[in-house]
Length: 179
Image (cartoon, rainbow, N blue to C red; front, side, top):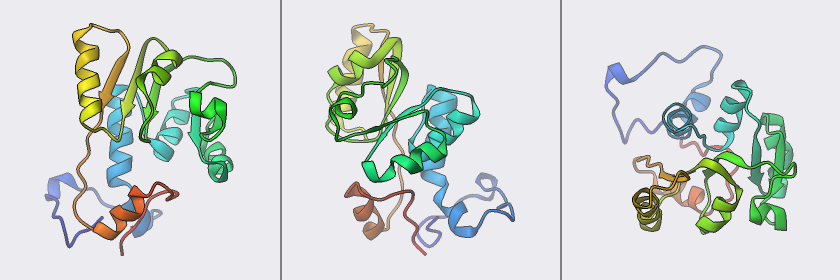
């Protein structure tokens, strides 16, 4: 995905299927890998890829997003979609009253109490935007032997500052490609 900035070992690559365009393939590595690792290693998921992967696994999915993306997220397979600016969206309240086995946290500044109130007894929060507070909270949950877990998920993309700046502003839909 930014070949001039990073080199992959041949054993870490796979041929691109002909039905997948080069830009589509380039968009998969970070978010797709994070979603796949979350699903296979942590029982969670990430964003648009996770909705699709979880739907393939017949999971019931409640997703939050901005109002402009609600139809897109439904089309990807979400069963329930919350506008994160509404009271239910802010509180992460499922319209059907469900508690969550896994919450994929892709935003910033949501307190643990919001997650904890909506988790099943052994629920997990996979934080895809972890900072020092996430690591500290995860350690505290472990020390307290809590059955509810906070799991920081770290990925390490390489350079391309302009693309990352656009991503950081929080309003990109889908993946940002640098060609």
